[in-house]
Amino acid sequence: MKMTVALLAAGMMLAGCVSTSDVTTQPEQLQHHRFVLESVNGTNVTSQKLLELSFGEDMHISANMCNQFTGEGKLSDGDLTVQKLAITRMVCTDPQLNKLDSTLKTMLRDGVQVDLTEDQLTLATSNDSLVYKLADLMN
Image (cartoon, rainbow, N blue to C red; front, top):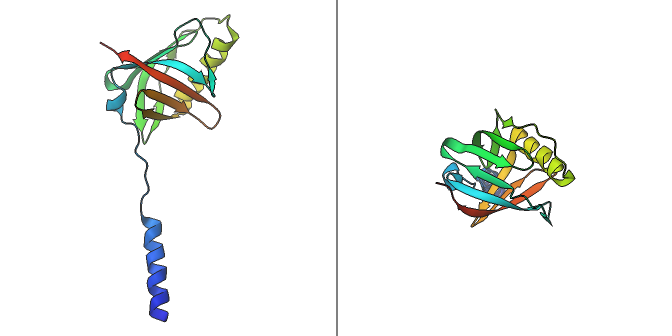
């Protein structure tokens, strides 16, 4: 009886050590691709302006909302951060674009979970979710 309890306890301890890691998006999956913003927090984007996010060599990121964003990103365990993010400083007359500028800036600087599923790219934090659709390959 004692042996059975000991084996059961050991099995439970070992089961707790098993990794259940999710498959995460890799830099190679994003490089040389351009994505267009489709929705923000589940609501379709209605902007007349094409809102893009592109990934180049060595995770060079460029994006546009009202302003232009550029920087060298780092993708680790599905978390994307851009340490040195350069942003133009134009005043946005469209309140939706103004808010999106702030959201994207915060996501890229503070870190955002990235998920690429087929042709859909999702950037998500605990507060916001941006969903992009693959537009085409960059040259």
